[in-house]
Amino acid sequence: MSPTETPRTDGFTRVLQNEAREAIRQWREQHSDDNYWEEPLLAVARAEDPLFPRLKEVASPEHSMPRDILPGAGSVVVFFLPFQKRVGRENAEATPFAARSWAEAYVTTNRLIESVNIRLKACLEQAGHQASITPATHNFDTQRLVSGWSHKHVAYIAGLGTFGINHLLITRAGCCGRLGSLVTSMPLPPTPRPHEEWCLTKAGRKCLTCVARCSYGALHENRFDRHACYEQCLRNDAHFSDLPLVDVCGKCSCGMPCSHEIPAPIRRNAE
Ligand code: SF4
Ligand code: SF4
Image (cartoon, rainbow, N blue to C red):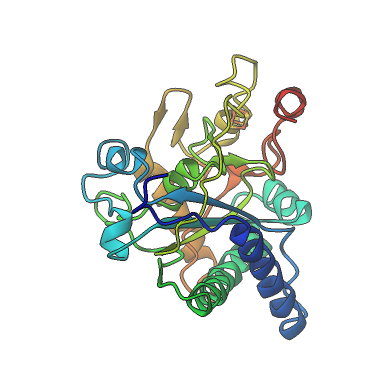
């Protein structure tokens, strides 16, 4: 380490992980009907990770850099709130629309993500650092459907998982859940990225269950039509017109071998 380099704050990632857990525990205490989640996962990327500039090519030319979110950014903290198997199962079984519980879990989880972010921000500030929260969702260009801050791409950089054919991030707790993130000036140690693919097809095994499940013309083995996908999401929103905006579908993340875990044949290698 050079004399000018700030020492990394080892151990603080665990503190943040505990804060995320505590935010969920408190939420459940205050909203006893909301019981959608498993234990959260949390990971960290260095703000200067060379993969961030590449997001302008792979995600969107307008994708923000950590220092656009917070001048003086040191790290990006990303968390994943996995849905319980029950939530995934109900959405997999519902037809032709998403399950009502899926739509409700989406609305509630957006509020929970904000709550987790506020708690993590306060914790970082108490430790003498700055933090800036990114919105849970609806921070995308509604014409091109690309995001100015893609949680799943940032989560990949932070080592939370690898991309599936379904264009979602497969974490150790699967892809059925929601991501949130914030940027901090604290220089935390980065989480190592997985060395292998956690999607069966990408790992050279047979699967494509997600492609077979998408009956809306959006998901193909080598192509994703984000407009066809969003049209289905808007159909679900219209169907649940009594709820706030629920532009969701999620059929390709429910009832899959990667929904709630790394698929078994790959998990054995990843352990
Ligand atoms: S369902 Fe199969 S092919 Fe699709 S993302 Fe999951 S593991 Fe990969
Ligand atoms: S979210 Fe729905 S419409 Fe979009 S790719 Fe998955 S299954 Fe298809």
